[in-house]
Amino acid sequence: MNAPLTPQAALAADALAPRRVFNFSPGPSTMPQSVLEQAAAEMLDYRGCGVSVLEMSHRSAAFEDILARAEQDLRDLLAIPAAFKVLFMQGGAIGQNAIVPMNLVARRPGRAIDVVVTGEWSRKSWTEAQRYGDVALAASTLGAAHDHIPDPAGWALRQDASYVHLCSNETVHGVEFQTLPDLRALGSEAPLVVDASSNIASRTIDWTRAALVFAGAQKNLGPSGITVVIVREDLLGHALPTCPSVFDYRVTAEQRSMLNTPPTYPIYLLGLMLQWLKGEGGVPAIEQRNRAKSDRLYAAIDGSGGFYRNPVAPADRSRMNVPFVMPSEALTDRFVAEAEAAGLSSLRGHKSVGGLRASIYNAMPEAGVEALVAFMHDFQRRHG
Ligand code: PMP
Image 1 (cartoon, rainbow, N blue to C red):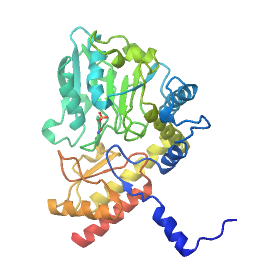
Image 2: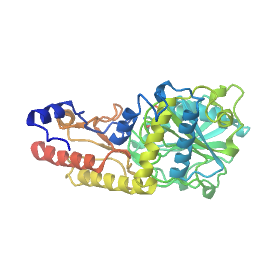
Image 3: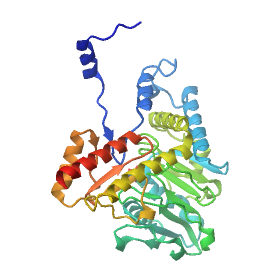
Image 4: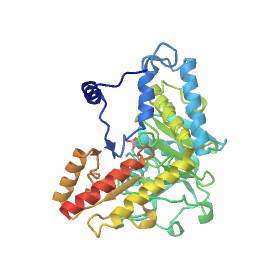
């Protein structure tokens, strides 16, 4: 039996314990402590291999197994149908803003791309796509401060579009599609491309509506350096001749994401995150928790008598990124500083919009949201 710690030993142990704050960073973002601990425990010797995953050949049986498991776990968690390929790519979601048009624009002779702009990230996709095709705005909130999702019934969709692009959750503006639009019901046969970087695996995806979903992993799925692309098979094989082979979806699928050396360690960490998600009850369970966390935070904002304000139409509010503003710049600065001191980290809003933003992805525990809400009440009592 272990002897009880002396007070001195307890103090020393406490001083050595890592200081973990509640990290509200928009990405890279908080990861479950158990995932980090497992990665640390396996750092020097991965499951008896005698080497770290960092040192392992991507052609080794051990890494092949890590890759295959990550794909299968993602398929299980997101209920991905067999007709979709899962690709692990590099270049981030920003890279996909070019890689998607390079692969899909030539599907139709007119090279038409319809884009729905609802915030900073779809605006970037819209701009980049203009280098590859005849791009039109199907709908946009450019003139409305990106504070809502435009009703799909009013979208201008072209019959001959190679694809339609939208961002399912706008990380900066905090606007989220609660359901994906049914393009066929709107009279369009074009495939729907979804940038789900900041809400993938936070809720279920309707695969009868989405034809291609991409996401940088560094919010809900682990570390930066790995981009997940889930693409319906019939969209493969249309890449422009100038598309680099390593960005060609068909080649990537044929080579099982190993045309070149993949980001092995990020894929391993992604795999640990997926295992964690399964252990938490999978996507439906995490979705319920995400709804409870965001409801709690929005209720605190809306119940503050205007001291804290969220500008987004309630029906379109993000469950992942909650932006809010305060009565003055000085109070905002003070809030950020006091929150940091209280162990509530990275709450400053994106520089383009200012204010505050709490990113509460899958790995943010309910206790983190409770601590933030308690801090907000206390701050308002002292400064309101
Ligand atoms: N799309 C969305 C919705 C994002 O939130 C981000 C990153 N914050 C990006 C694209 C860009 O991702 P990356 O930096 O991985 O290229």
